[in-house]
Length: 187
Image 1 (cartoon, rainbow, N blue to C red):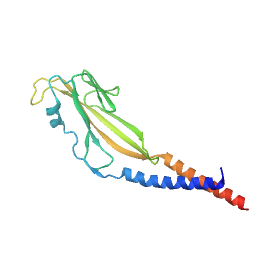
Image 2: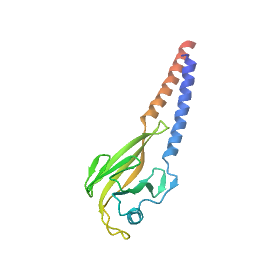
Image 3: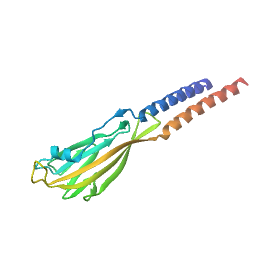
Image 4: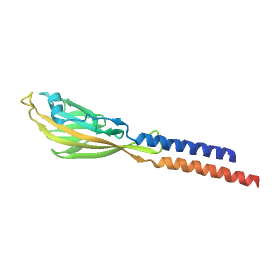
């Protein structure tokens, strides 16, 4: 590769990397107002039917929200298994299995998932906290119910991705190599 090509490629990589930093900052700054997370009593009255085996309502607290949260997923089923987006919920008597992790009544399952962003400077995370709230035996509208209730929260977050620094470093290195080779050629 010619010295000028290295230098030009280095400049292009540096400029794109700096632009990516600016876009990354915009990705992590809150901009949306969300305010309708799960409210247990309201949800239970609306979703529970006499044949319900599992009921679930999971709130999300997104990274880009200025205030409040929203609903990640909710619903009920007459089966002993249900998929709530990335979560597999299964009932075994009074035990709730979340992604094959058993939870007795009152216990919480915590895990974090990582997701690459289109931006090499940012890694997005989701921290899940899912609770086994126990059995619901009746509601205002239904006398006999045998449903297991799962509730929880999903928190959005982010970390700096080291890939962005590697790309920026590569651009600087290419620029310096091209400059060094140009200086050697001119001498």
